[in-house]
Image (cartoon, rainbow, N blue to C red):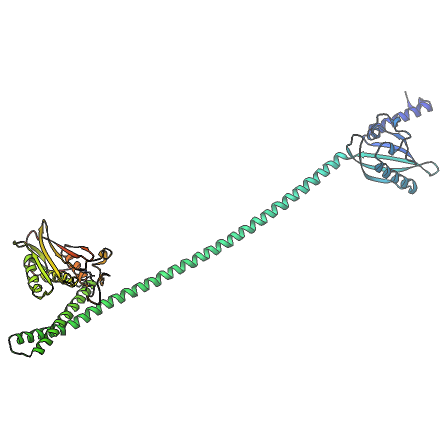
Amino acid sequence: MQLEDLSPKAAAERERGLLNTLMDSIPDGIYFKDTAGHFLKINQGQARNLGITQEAEALGKSDFDFFDAEHAEASRRDEQQIVASGQPLLDRLEHYVDNDGKPVWVSTTKVPAWDARGQVLGIVGISRDITELMETAVALRQAKDELEVRVAEATAELRSTNLRLQQELAERLQVEEALRAAEQERAQLLLSEQAARAEAEAALVLRDEFISIAAHELKTPVTSMLGYTQLLASRIQRGEMTNERTQRALQVIGEQTTRLWQLITLLLDASRLQVGHFMLDCRTMDVGALVRRVVAEIDPVLERHTLVTELPDTAIMIMGDELRLEQVLQNVLQNAVKYSPHGGQITLRVEHTGAAVAIAVSDQGIGIPAEAAAQLFTRFFRASNMDSRRISGLGLGLYIVKEIVDRHGGTVEVQSMEGQGSTFTLRLPISSGPVPPSSSALGF
Ligand code: ADP
């Protein structure tokens, strides 16, 4: 059927039907209101917005019947302004809560509808639901805000980490600097310590050389004085000079010179040992003969002491420096006398034991404190129990004794009980094998 075939009524009917179909197929809410805000016509989209199914349910009603008062009031104000001004309101963002309590965002455009006389007849409105868009925008904004917060936090953390690292680096640099300084200081200390030590060693060498030279220089005139004193003494003895006082004076001079000579000899020997100029002249010799000779020298001058000697009859041959061993024996015997100031018995026992000969000298004197034993043979050591004002000495005798005995391959031991006496035992190896050529000077 052609359009022009329709009656005017049918054509109008058809026109309205098409219009309704057009309006209902648009998802947005479309409505027509009178100037007082009553719905005159709505499409399906607006029915959904109002929460109804039939258009008839809305006709004659206003927003106050469907929305909360705040939203309805705002809407009414907008519409009155449109009616009064004749100006449209475009893309107005509206927010409300629907009947199910769900928040809804709509973008509304309202335009005035004019009648033929140019009067505002009502309002045509189109509302587009943009809830999803808004929710997405809100979610995006929240995500952006959260991201910004996280970025700010991460930045702050990075900054503080960076700061901490810088501080740590600065501290480490300081520590390294301090270590370098300490290392330098240590190196300098080491250098100055080495220099001080070298200086001290040089001073020691100088001192030892001085003692050696001084002792040597002193010994020559003392030897000659001693010789002349002995010569004079023997002349007096032979009756060539008889003055008694001169004889006594000569005796004192002789004794003192001998004492001086002994002290100088000790100093000279100790200094030779220090600088490595101490020589032994070893030959085959009989220990028994040596002991008898030393006893024969010492025994006559003893006043408060008794010397008892126990000697085997047979010869005991060793390789030794007779003069040095005589010095050793004299020293130990003189000590036995010196350190038993109240007298008593001194026993000298010689025993042939296996590969060695043992010479033991015992006294009944002041003895040696146990704590002194370890140092007894060191230079300048004197035990605390002897009264240095009454018993003179340099603390060098036993040091030299031990050195001489050591260089013969022997040993020196001491046994003592403080206040009861001491026994010094020298052990020297017995000579075996062929006798070496005489006068062999063994330097050590
Ligand atoms: P000096 O007799 O000149 O002091 P020595 O080296 O001969 O030096 O002796 C060292 C120390 O050993 C002595 O000062 C003394 O204290 C102690 N001593 C040595 N022999 C004896 C002894 N027979 N009895 C007690 N003490 C001794």
